[in-house]
Length: 430
Image 1 (cartoon, helix red, strand yellow):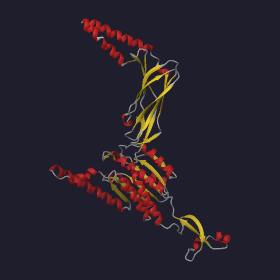
Image 2 (cartoon, one colour; image 1 turned 30 degrees about the vertical axis):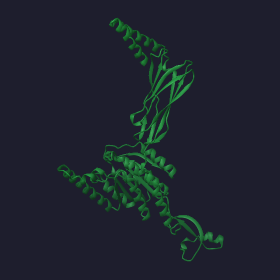
Image 3 (cartoon, one colour; image 1 turned 90 degrees about the horizontal axis):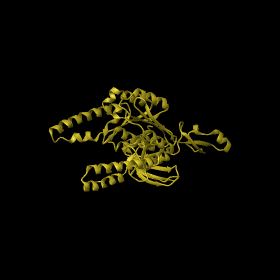
Image 4 (cartoon, one colour; image 1 turned 60 degrees about the vertical axis):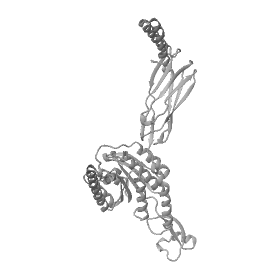
């Protein structure tokens, strides 16, 4: 049961006779009379079970984009009903006006739309739908919260996609500068052409030459199905807030941009989220299938407050890929890499693959290096300088293994990783 504003207004009217008679008894009788009428009105109100509610939301929406939740209210009886419905969502869903009034005649329905603008990625479960049905006097009514299980998946923002067109243009330039036709084993067959002086005799196709009564050779094109494994570290350091957001968010942006670029280049992409166990995995055979799979997989991962298991990560990568591949490790370059075994893991992976380590720098550390206007600032700058030197030492040790290292602020790490990938591709190191 609930009371409407009309009950409060009617109770306030009782102030007039109470003031005229100067009697508290009259006031109490008036209030009790209003409550009795409200109770009777609630009893005469239709049961909430006579109304059905259905909630509809899109299967997924990208972070910072707007969507809507649609509530359909159906009157299952022949009686006309008046009331309201509340579409409840968690605060991170960014729900707008979620209360919708309705007037339904018998066996009719209506809809109410609640605008949503999520502020965090992941699966957002909707709360209960509260239905209120008014009595004939509009003084009170019946109320009940109905469980309408609904989930909205919020995909990563992928703000770094603005860098994709420029990198794709560079990729096309690289393809234009590289020879389209090449000879030699280990490349994909493209077509046949007539033999010219200087061609390698090993490329002569003798069967085709016999059929054509002329000497023809096989031509090949560069391989475009190289393997790219992107491992996103979800261990405890990924929860560190850098630039107002967890470090994991920047790693996700780098993985998305890298996946988009590599899939456009014709490479086979696989993304893994790992700390001590595999948290998510995505792969695809083309750009059209890779990006939706990666976005869906990375949408639900969260940092785990555990130490990473780097030997386990090495075993997992060796199980997933046997041929030479590009291994992109989105992790943190700091002194903890020594104790966690990350340096040994990178050295092991570098023996068979090309490793690219991507790490997010903290802009506040750079700002501390220049804040020396006070005694406290000098000590802070000294601590920041020591941390920077330790990080540079770890970076140098990683490079000694032959791996590449990319360190950049949160907004710049994704394009920096893409540039490093293009540089490796141009140098023929993949």
